[in-house]
Image 1 (tube, rainbow over the protein chains, first blue to last red):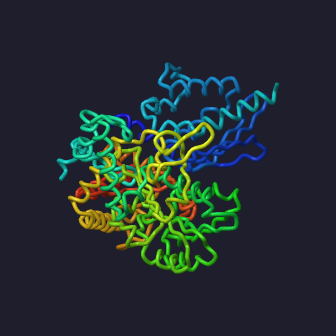
Image 2 (cartoon, chains in turn blue, purple; image 1 turned 90 degrees about the vertical axis):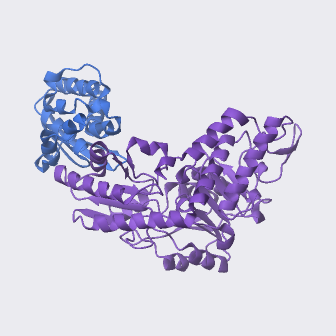
Image 3 (tube, rainbow over the protein chains, first blue to last red; image 1 turned 135 degrees about the vertical axis):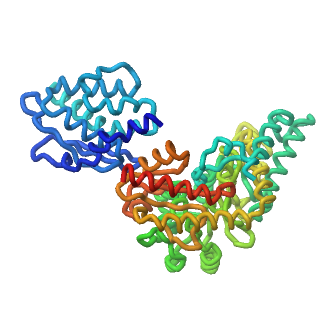
Length: 144
Length: 394
């Protein structure tokens, strides 16, 4: 019960319902993923300059958890270097697995600190992050 | 009657019966008694226990067969509806009953398990034809009949697992028979809720699962009209289904044994029969009436919520299942709040019917499904929960 109040907290609801974050970015790197079991989808846009995320946005549809998570993600990675983004992603994954993680760098994302205890919804939470992970991986491969 | 179902002591409002039903003590005890006191492998055993287990297994077959109006030899025990349909599709091909150039007629209501096994036949030159539903997801039987031209085989759900629409099988089967079309009914949702008699209906094949009708998981039935029993070759071969084996060649046992290679789910069959006994003692007419009344009450109650959109026929054709969406709330969020705050268990997602979801223009729906132990209070609890969902998330 408590985790649910947390899961649907005012903060999370605000992020989920904030349609202003949903936009495309011209000339950005773009990638998408779907959660086939529920039809949720996220298309991510990343604009990089000198190894820094100059702008980030997404377009998608889905449940409160997947949308709030995507929304928080694009906000937190904006202005960060690729290394910092990798670090955020690593800590998000740790939080999801219930391992120790660095709360300070996750900001509002700690609203999902209980997600490891809700396996039925962790796929929703991770959807946007899986897209980001794929983008980071292809960037790494591209730079080799 | 609630006392027959120990699960309900948990205080859960269980509205996920289309996925699987709860089990009465009678079924649980039948299975546990089998393992406690009667466990032995069946057939060919000379000792008392084996003879007893064989007898229990075959008596179970008789009771389940009689429940659907079939002869015992016409009922094969499978793992469930999915394995029944896979078995059927492959056997129709191998026996030459379906061959290159033949057309199979399906509808866009079908569960993936009544779609993918037929898609697999396309590489053998067999083509699929589909009857579409309207924008509410309703299948018109006239459209099915109109599409029968040039069709060799019809495989149709008797009751949609998404919309709860009960298809008028008599009308469709009559029309098919007149045109010499073979008929298979996916009875996964039909057999648990509606009295279905294969001999009266005159269908050729029927698939169904025990766990959706108070029985255990891992066992189901495939009815094969006796005229096909010889032509069908076994799906699985090995122990238990043979007559004479040499190193080079084998002859098979008579049906239904020839279709049940390996040690079958004996305790499952015993539990399946106990489930059928329970349904018989409750009365299938009463089951159908209970499910229909609950469905009607749910539709009426949900219609009063202006933020809920309902799918399906919405009239007396709808039995046991109600699919809907809440404005502004994703089905997963709806289910989470209902579960956590109201202990109401519903299912959300595509319900293994992605083509139908696309037709309805949604990626997922919420689904409440009822069975004989549900009450009107359960529906009230659902409605109360949905109001909360709307306030919180919608």
